[in-house]
Structure formats: structure tokens, C-alpha cells
Length: 248
Image (cartoon, rainbow, N blue to C red; front, top):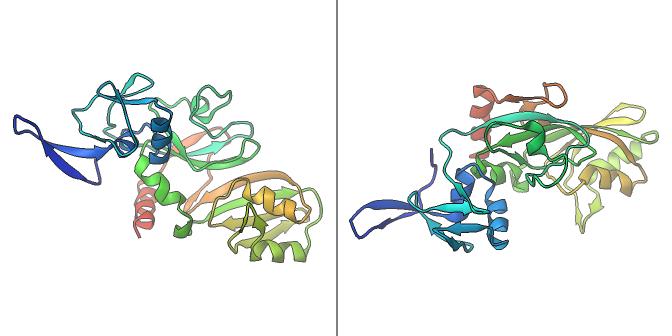
């Protein structure tokens, strides 16, 4: 199913084909997200009918698309998985990297991750071959919640909880206000609506705390409920709610 039509072109024989930007075509093919597609194009790894693709190039279903000289075709069915990532697995589709998430899951179709979890973190990460939903889920302005369980190296104080919740200066910005709840002497739950690089670790480090363990237990309405290293398909109810939320 293709959600958006750009515009059409007519061949000399009068046949009508739908034109699509190359990055959108690659995302709809289930190969990667649009952002990753642009990166591949910039690296000169994508060809259209034997010619190097450019950012913004248009293609049709009749075009011959290759990445690293391997042919790409559209997927007929989209896949949506909830995966419990173990510590030590890297959130990357680059299969030259040892311990990459794609090789670990070894799914029978090409899939990629939505967002990331640090190599030394564990928990819920969504996997799909639907490139169109990736940015909709990750956009900070959409305020989609992600919940984590965190353990630190020393006793938690009320000042730490208060200051963490107000926003912390890291990476040349101030983190958004967030909800945080102490669950033990050195443990807490935190709900974020953004995903800066190593955000929780950097926030804790700003106040002199080191993260000992970090586990994501929820993304939006989808909860972690499978053993470490296992995955499951999203339910129809979860998918219906997911598409309702990202189309607001």
C-alpha cells in the first residue's frame, strides 16, 4: 500500500506511471528510512537505471533501482515488531558492524530500527520495513512518550529528581521537562518526549551521577513484554492506536 501520490508521467506509448522521490521509494520498499536513503544517495551507493541517483531524483515502478548494485523492489506487506534489545547489541543496519541489530534478529525480511538504544542499554525498540512512519514517531514536536528504568551509582536526592524534571543543559540545548519517579535508593523511572544522543546518561552525568543500568520499558502505548533478545509482532489494537497517534 502506497500512502502518498506525488505526480504522474506519461510514456511515449501513453502509459501512465506514478512518480515518487527516490528516498520515498526506498522507504516504501522497506529498505531503510528516508533519512538513511538520503545518506546512501550521498555516498553514491544508489543507482536508477544504472545511473547514480541524486537527492530528489524521481522514479516509477518501472525504474530499476539498486543499492550497492543489488536490486530493490517494493514490499507488499509491512512488518511491525517490538524487540527487547539485549546489552551489547548495536542499533545499526550496517551489517559490517559486529553485533548489529539486524544480524541479531535475523528476520526473514529486511527490517530496520525506529530510533536507537545505546549499545550498553537494553529494552524496547521497534523494528519495521515501513520507512514512512519512522520520522513521524521520532519527531520531537509530536511529544511521543518513551519510558525508562534507570539505576545510578549513588543515592538519589530530591534535588536530583527536581532538577532532572525541569530540564538539563546538554548538547548545546536544554532538555524538555520530563516526569521522573524514584523507585528505590538508587533507581528511578523517567518518561521523555525527545531522544537526544545518550540523553539520560548525559543528564545524570551533569549532576554527578553515573548510569549503572538503563532499560526502556515503553514507547508510546507499546510496552515491553517479551524476554531479552526476543520479539513479537504488534497487535492490531497497537497498530490502530499507533497510526491514530502519528496522524494527529
